[in-house]
Length: 251
Length: 148
Image (tube, rainbow over all chains, first blue to last red):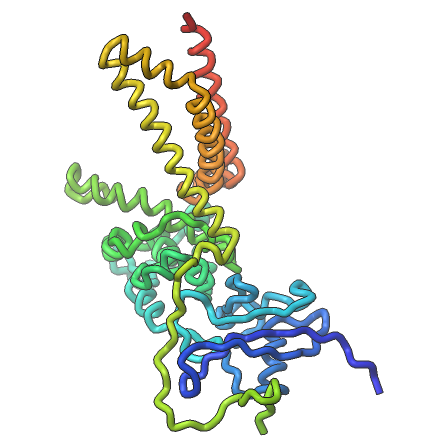
């Protein structure tokens, strides 16, 4: 018989709404190997120890943005976080902070999706364009203006990193505002006027107090804090220039 | 079959109890949860030191306008050990404040392209310190030049 391998303790904040009014911690002992991610640890629990544990996941390679959770108090993609880096444990896992918990590690994302829809996260052409006119041309410099912000995978780690969102769930939040900037900063886009009211609102960029942790935790290096804070200048310009020029200083 | 993770604790039992609504976790004490938030709160708190020093200087200007006696009074108050102690504390707080702001400064600026390459965050932060160094050097030079 082979020798039992190393194990690690994983503590999960459980919430089963049909069973308890408040979340409770539950501890599992999980065998682990050096190449195991936190997500694989959870999958071991679900497959072998406790089939009632609920969590979201899909791609296992930091692309789908489903498996965000708090790992030892930090927002992380559980597929991109390795148990070997969390030794000796115990590893404490809880649902993404600042979101209501539906069940165990599953949070309510409805409000986030509503905000995402509201900023019109798609190219709105300046003028109607027929296929015969061909593709849009863009210089590398124009691409660089928005490219990093287009890496967002909507994993919401930045929301779990943002205390302002935690204190006021109405705040549009770092991820949505970074995507708003991604389209506004695109030379092919003409939808700026439709997005500025969201950006200018109290719940827009002005709810941000430049904590900056959102950019720290972003697994795709989007730097949402940069998108939000540079738009405070744009929002101020949008406000003041309206008194000076008929189009509010917009080209 | 559902196996319990720990004996004695039911994994999940069938229940007729109406399910509780999504659970909203409290935010009390949020800034103590992460060292990053503690540093943020230090940055915010040191703003008080900046405001206090502005108040000290404003008082000086008010005293200057009020005449020689008031000005000398303010000047003498500045030389007391209490005042020197306060200034030392305020100086430390303002250096911490400046550092925290120069660290976050790159996040507040649009993309700056110099010679076809994007200016790095470190370069922007260093630029802030260089400007501070230059302003301090100019101020000290001016004070030296105008000394009685």
